[in-house]
Every structure is written in structure tokens, then in C-alpha cells.
Image 1 (cartoon, one colour):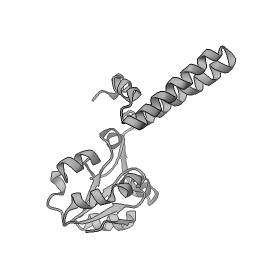
Image 2: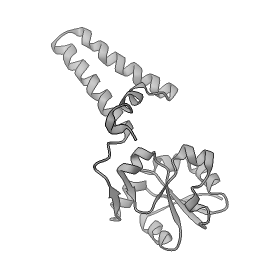
Image 3: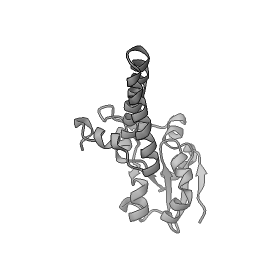
Image 4: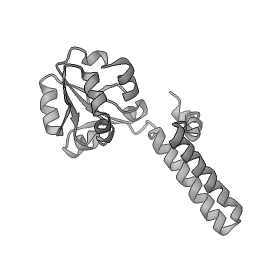
Length: 174
């Protein structure tokens, strides 16, 4: 059964009529901010285990991520996960939900999502290497090269050493 995109207002109506909202983002993203009553089932788990227990009996499911990009890119797999159920993708994800004026649960005590932490760390190191290379010694440009090589490796292999290191920081331990 094909999966279509619906607006936040349409999703809200369907939720009031028994639909179940499924958040396919990572657990760290979900802990920081989520839509009230959305069930967490990260996309890799959804592919392996299927729908979460709370959605098994629902006739209609609505999938969402942060911006809608992950759900749009995974539309075929999401449709398969939904099986015979009526299934939709929330247009623009969590951001579209907020833009429509619907509430979310935001927990500022939770750390930023791990990938945002990686972006901040990598960007800071690259900027520091460039500034120090210009001001102090060209040898500092090697720091930029090291960060670039790490990002390239992460993109090609799916293994991010910086993310692994950041997971060891106390605020990222679960």
C-alpha cells in the first residue's frame, strides 16, 4: 500500500481518531524533543523488529522524523513496515508539527543530539586548525586535514570515531 504525506493538522485529526504516531529518529533526538504520545521506534529497529507494540493494533500509523527528509527517503521501507495498515508520513516532521503550532515535549537537560555534537566538535577543530595555521604555524593545517579525513571516513564507512569518543563523555552516557 503506498504511503502519502499529510500535514500536521491532518495528522492531528487522525491521531484524535485512533492513529498512532511513530518517531523514527534516534533515541538521543527523541529524549531531547518529541511530539506528545509519539512512540519511539528508530528506523533501523523498525526495519528489524517492525512496528512497536503500541502500534500493533492501530488501523492507521503516521511516521515522522525531524524535518521529514528521513521519512521521505525511507517511504518504501516504512510502507512495508506498516503492512496492510493505512500509513502516512508527517509533512516536514517534527519541525512541521511545531510550525503548525502543536506542542512538543522539550527537555533542555538532555544533551544535544550526538551528530550535532560531532558537527560542533569537527567544525571547531577545523576552524581552530585554520586560524592557528594562519597565525602560529602552517603545521596546524594538519589538524584541518585530520578532521577532513575523519569526516570522509565516516561518510564512506558509516563509522564515526569522533561520535564514539563523544559517547564516552559523561553527559552522553545513558
